[in-house]
Length: 88
Image (cartoon, rainbow, N blue to C red; front, side):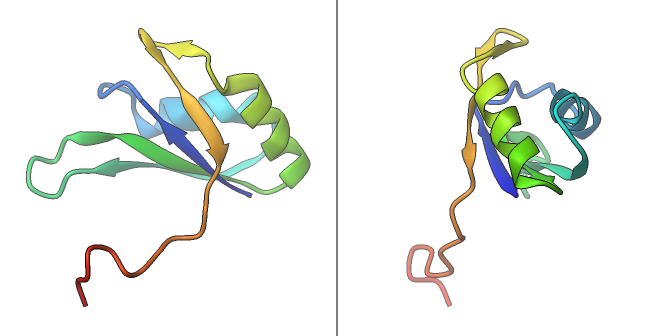
């Protein structure tokens, strides 16, 4: 299950994101999206969990919780739209 995590603190590491979700089940990957130019976090990321039951439990447990002063928005990731702004 692919999970979107929004409103992440800019200082959180991928390891910390992984550990936050690992308490609820097996995490296969945790990625924070970085700005290409500045190399700084964009404030959101994705966590892949091996089991959808654990993924749902993690979403319910973590959504709207506070981490480093920021309230996280967590939900199932939507499929990516490849038509971003008309770029080809």
